[in-house]
Image (cartoon, rainbow, N blue to C red; front, side, top):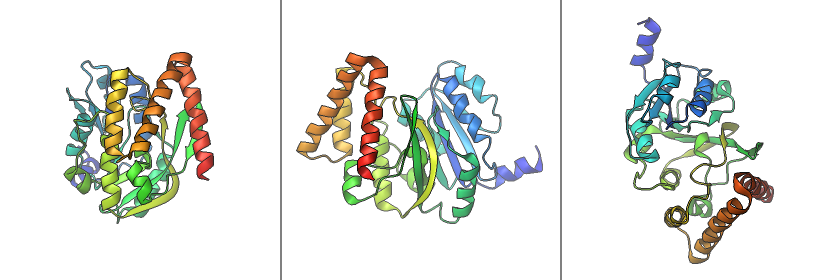
Length: 274
């Protein structure tokens, strides 16, 4: 072991990046490749791999400086809690496999510039959402009381959250869709925060939270969203209508049709917020 390796183990990193994967080696490799450009004295990377095979383990082996935790878990949020429990950093950043950093060098500089407050303050930036092949830059929303109640939050791929708070408040692994919203709302209400004028995360707008699923899955998603977002009756009706509309767009136009619809709605929403 080199003296640099010994030093990196003795001195906790500023930020722990936690990436959860499950049988998606191509997406995992895309995500991890960007992390190699980070300042290794400031960051550690933890891969939480719930795959029942070695598909992702083979990719993780190409990145020996990253920690790889491989074993069964109880779902996405349980896996994220495993990474949370093992993190040594003062601040945490969750990046799903398939997500990537917009500019790893800029993120290293951002952390270096704000390292004195990372243990106590949420530092968050903007994001780029990839929808139907389009890269759409989205500024973090204003964190008013109304937006917090409704769960209108920055993207988790662009949020550095103090580890001490998060480790005392892990994700509710009983939930399937809204545990991150529930946690982030509590964090933004409890902690000081700093918005930086920079894009941090790039992610595909889709996956379990935006794909239509079965009617039973949609019903569960509806219940969780209503609870996590503290919705009033008329707002619950709006959520139900949105989920049903998404299901119908997918039924009529397939995944491509749903993606086109989501891209139009996202751009219209961003134009209205300017």
